[in-house]
Amino acid sequence: MENIKSSILLIDDHPMLRNGVKQLINTINDFEVIGETGSGIEGVKLAQTLDPDIILLDINMNDVSGLEILRYLREKNISARIIMFTVSDAKEDIVTALKTGADGYLLKDMEPENLLKALKDISEGKIIMDEAISHIILDYMRHGGGTTTNQSHDINLLTPREHEIFNLLVQGLSNKLIAKELDIVESTVKVHIKSIFKKLNFKSRMEMTVWYLQSKE
Image 1: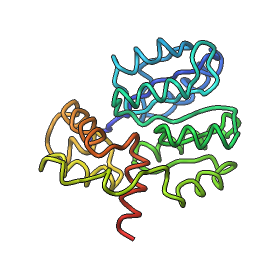
Image 2: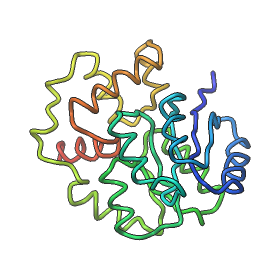
Image 3: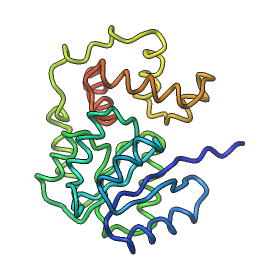
């Protein structure tokens, strides 16, 4: 069976940490680091140019706040799953990141094997969170996940193809698996996902999935 790798972009202003994370990721075949930078501004450019599957983003960058980078990337409808990877366990940072469109939140003091597991989970469409701050994230999700009213998320706005992709997204399929399932190229999937986010007024897959699950209750 063909091994479908997920591409990763590292945005963190600590060179030693970036190098260590890159070496760790390279120990398994499921992922490929396609870019890295210590500059937030450069990170935005790389995200738009490389269009990775996953972005590991630090909050405390030297030039631009990671939260500002996140906000900008979501405004540009970047389809990557953006994971905050930081030392900050402040509730304000966590909730702001999730409201702004983060797909997960991990602390840098986690064990290496747990980081790899988290990356595998996110590549399979699961919502990831650091156990140390899970109570904050679960409380946030329990109270609506920052979503607005249902009328802001009208799935009738979607085309038939977008409906197909939406249904696969909320099942947790990655871009690559959606492309394989529908027999289309991955770049086409990404274009459709950007359109879906824009039409349904969602910032992230996590926000969309939480809304979908709550709408079925």
